[in-house]
Image (cartoon, rainbow, N blue to C red; front, side):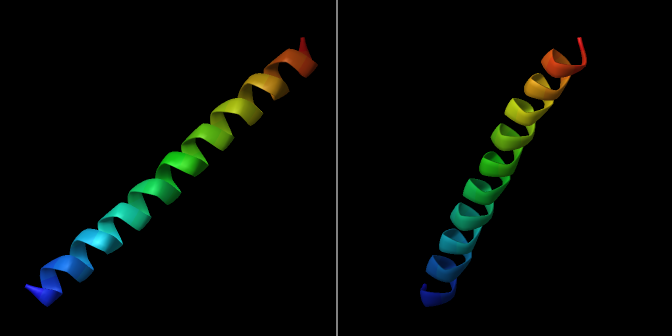
Length: 37
């Protein structure tokens, strides 16, 4: 049970990091496209 909680918390942390990088990259990409045009 303890191991399961560690895995779940790890997945949540990884999910948040991925979501943050995807959102940041998306915003940066839109700004980059706008500056190029």
